Length: 243
Image 1 (cartoon, rainbow, N blue to C red):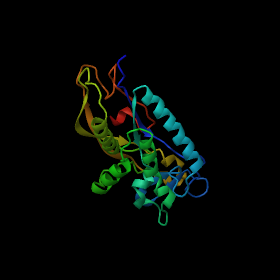
Image 2: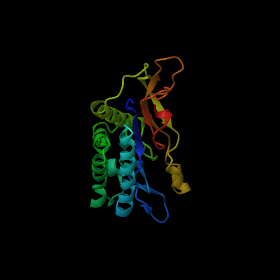
Image 3: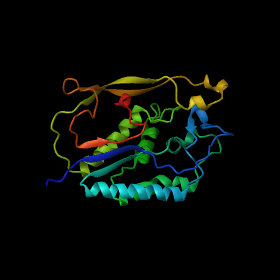
Image 4: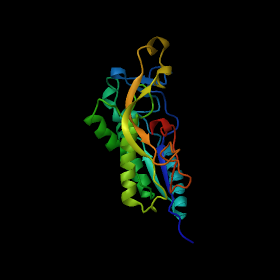
């Protein structure tokens, strides 16, 4: 029997500890930072529930082992929290606790030890946010990354996958990314958690995004082939509108 060479990619994996408390004042679900930056309450800067983290890692370790026994490789697009990348916009006096500072690297190490491919996206996004601050990798008033951030992570993941995995050649030509256009975010999803009198200060945001160039008639998405050697499983960060 010919071994399968399917690849399971898991973008936007959230390895969050349970029981996170809001970082804002009172019962607020959002932390208002500097220069119009908003951060969600689950970007917990001070606490790490180690028991919950061990449970989550144990589950992922088991799943990775099961998939690899079926000749299915696993790659994680492990997204760092927004507050890690844009800590310079946190409110004055707010900073990450040492145990939280170490969390992302610890997760990368643990998942790699379990046999998964895990690029360091905290480094990739951090470098990009410092090199070109004009186009953020996360939306200021939203929980999600921008198309710029998505592309940076996609390139980092694909580069590692091509180097480490031996996938069969594609059966047909795929779609390509072409020229740049602007994507407009009408209102960030964190604005709704602000007091009503503060919401008017937050307007639309824009980010550059690449147009999709179909290689075959009718193609409209990057992963639309009927028979694919890579299956993408993700959360809300995996959006067709981000190409």
